[in-house]
Image (tube, rainbow, N blue to C red; front, side, top):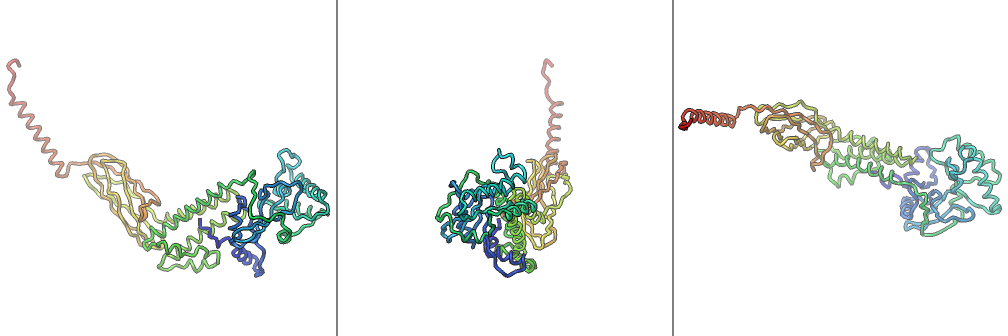
Length: 426
């Protein structure tokens, strides 16, 4: 889908943060759980990406204990140890603006949820009044500023609570150290939309690569494609990359960078399914626009008055580089047919015309479907339908032969009619 490891590792996150804040002071980075749950493979990948701590929801540990405990875990992975900060279930649910139970009618409003949150935290303090426990509570990315302000103001005024930061929680004595992940799948997130988005992004990116390898006249080979830098935009050098020369490699790299930068935003911030669909749709439109720069110009219908004729087709190229494509044609009729394929080379920002031969064996009307294909004969772009009308006139040599044979049969019939012997009884 164009989301390279370099786009989301810890070092890149710190770089983007430093650019946004105009600072050179490094900051702690945490990998936040997305639509799926943390598995051992996912934790290993996050650790390999440079993240030493991740944030998980309450499904991370499937074991239910009688009392709440510090939500800090250390997991041993093949890439190194990684700290998992698990959200406390009840507090996190309430902070996300949800009721802890469908039967909790008092939690149907913000005021009710806030009251329950304070009461729940007080209960935890009474449960073990002399124990120090670090509990994580997160807000939803869609939480309003007013709701966050209400919760934080109430927490600050609760004398039994001490607000601290993630670094303190990450440094606390872990509740568990292991090399396994005990996931609670009873409330597993649905990742089907995420997978669908990735497939759609992958499809639109492949279309841009197909333009580079199979449509441009000076097409890039697989080595050229693999050498394209996928993160020029992330390094803030897209302006230099965009200044292309006669070599289309830099220009294609610019297209891929734009696609990949948009793709990355599909999984940044909110994981809302509709947001992901819109991002995927935007990249689909982007790829279609690029491929749509090569198109068949609409043509007039063709009338045929003999056994053969010519059908001209004009192909336009709005791209800044020359292209080499195939133009294919097929009709709906077996009696009125066209030649099947023509190769054409079109200079940059120009158009070229190819000619198809029409063969007719009877009068009638049919439609010729003219389409474009790359050099591997994979169709792309628009399909132009051209109506072919045949009014077959007897003007060729074969026509005169047919007429002569008909006249001969007529003469023979007349001669027989006047020269046949009558029957005696007639």
